[in-house]
Amino acid sequence: MVRSYFPLLLLFGFVALNAVLILGISAVTLRPRPTPIKSQPYESGMSPLGDARERFSVKFYLVAMLFIIFDIETVFMIPWGVAFRQLSCAVALTPTGCPAGQVSFFGLGEMLVFIGILLVGFAYVWKKGALQWD
Image (cartoon, rainbow, N blue to C red; front, side, top):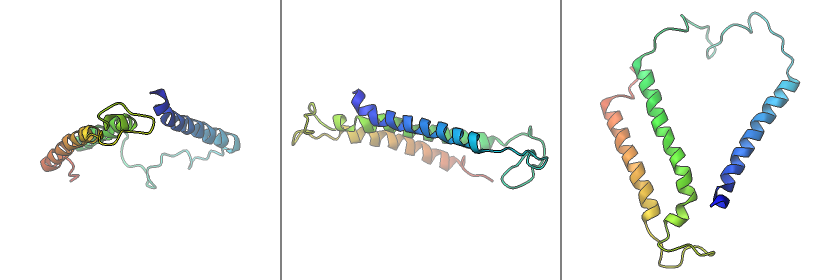
């Protein structure tokens, strides 16, 4: 079981090492020269307008929550992908794979049900107009 998660752990290790390496190189090679213009707030190429504590529309928070909900979907797909071969074989896996005639639809079917439920939720949110940004 641990061997099947080794590529994922290797990926996380590479990402962490890459982040530390990039931050370290930029800290060593950077020569900070602060100026009053560089110290001003910067928002996507425009000077900031208004106060930083102004109220946001409820639509903003609704879209943010929907993004989190649908983004969690990918988190649940990683362990499913790791166990897919075991879930799609009606008997125990052999070293060469699933024996002929023992392939089942269970592994794919459970993910199709999961995605189907999410698509129904997405259609409901779309129909209610929660994604309209007017």
